Length: 121
Image (tube, rainbow, N blue to C red; front, side, top):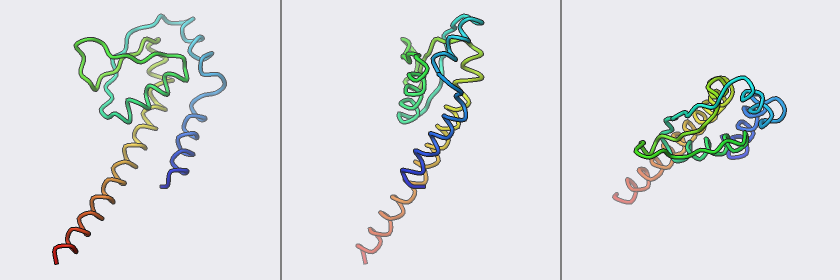
């Protein structure tokens, strides 16, 4: 998948998950449920950046709590909102990005391996 197709796919996932104003959606959830601190395990720098961007669209701040692992990011939001609204599209986008990153790295490593094999002959 090329870069434009990847961006289009991310936009499609976002559009399918968010109907209307994301910040208004969060306000509606906060009327029903109080905020709770969520510690989210996000293993790579790319997915951490993605989570921060997704949260920013909702008006949420992502932060690192003291004594937490570097792969753990925290966000204060209603539990139902995180479970039903925030996490599903983020998870879909993160899986797609990780898959594309893995495929890219495989291609680069295979090209490098072929070039070193030819250089030694």
